[in-house]
Image (cartoon, rainbow, N blue to C red; front, side, top):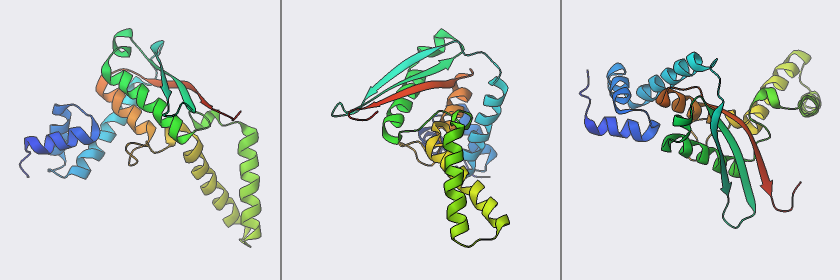
Length: 199
C-alpha cells in the first residue's frame, strides 16, 4: 500500500475539484494510483447523481458570458434544489464555465433527447449514403450509421461534449462532480447562444 501524501491529495483535488476527504479516500482505495483515484471519484459522482436525479430543481441561476470582442454571447440556466446552493461560488463558477464552454463549442442542445428528429434523420440519411457509396454490406452499414450518430451526439449535445478547459471530462462528468460535491440534484435546463451576423 502506497503512502498517501498531502501533495497527492492536493494534486487529485486540483484535477477533480472533489473534497479533500473524498480525494484521500479515493487514493487509499486505489493504492495511490492517481488515474484509478480519478476513476473512483467519477464513479462516486455518478452514484450520487443517480440518487439525486429524481429531486426537483426549482432554484438556480442564469449565467451570462460575453466572449472577448463582444461577438458571441451566451445565457445559460442551471437549476438546483435550494437557493442556498445556487449562491455558492462553486455553483456560480460551474454555471459560468458552462456558459463559456457553450460560447466556444456551439452545441445544438443540452441532451440527446432534445435533438430535433428532422436533423437526426437528415444525418442518418447522409451517413447511410456515405456507407453505401463505400461499398459496405448492409449489416455493416447499420453499425456504421449507429457509430456515426453516436459521434454526432457527442459533437452537438452539450452534456456529451468534452469540457473545453478539461477535455478529458465531459460536461456531464463535470455536472456529476458538482452534484457529488454539493449534495443536490443539479441540471442544465436550457441555453441560448448569440453570435453577431448569424441567425
